Image (cartoon, rainbow over all chains, first blue to last red; front, top):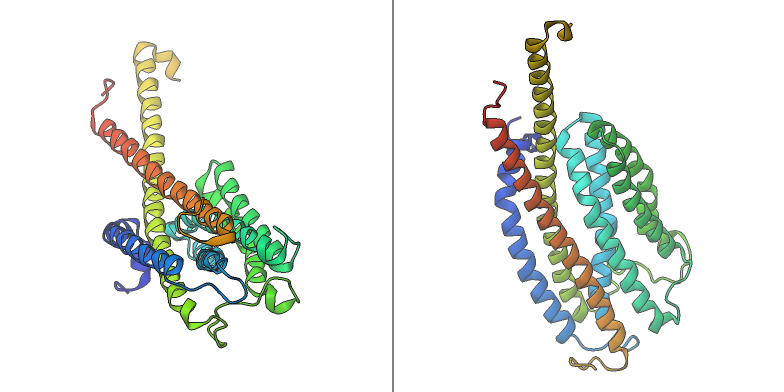
Length: 261
Length: 56
């Protein structure tokens, strides 16, 4: 079992692995995103219907995709954390939440900026848009819950349950365009259906998607490293407070034997 | 002002990429800042834990 994925649930092993992976992922993300941005912004033609607003597609679609996929990562990590009690799993979910919230916010803002020229409205209470907004609230609620509870074990368990409840909205925001007749267009990319994207836009979109995945991996690795260190710092401070209390009690007992009883 | 020649929809395109860069830039800076602060505090706490206290 030494080579299994559970090896990396050990904080020491995770720190070793992430110390190597994070800088590479960050460098590759920077290169991939630079290529993807240059290609999509300056080397793609205007769409015959949407004209130059098609440029927004290259940031909106990867961001919306990551908004849902990062939540899926959080759900899996939370489930593993709840079932197997692996401390790193909870920290993965916690570190992924602000990244997912940022991607969701980008998807909503770029969607509004794309919707206004194409639909004539910044926002509509469409099933896709509404479920993504609720997903953002779940991300924020998840982060708020972690910060509201001082005991990290209790916070991890309660936040994991909230995360599992929110998975319904992540699922809905992914499949809303198929379940209901929405103003929002259907999925641009799908594993089981033919792509709706013209080839000239498809390749730069894939580069941008690869770039945001690498960015997510780099940020997640740094975030989890920070959470592991923060957990160690908390344990150290609690131990130091305990030692200081014990020292004070010993001093008081030495000065006044009656006070120690 | 449209330095890249995006035409009549330039404001929406600049707005989208500007907001995205601001959000991701903020996220990256916050992540790195928090990482370095926690690292510094942990190093200080570990150094102080290694130092024998006056009571000992």
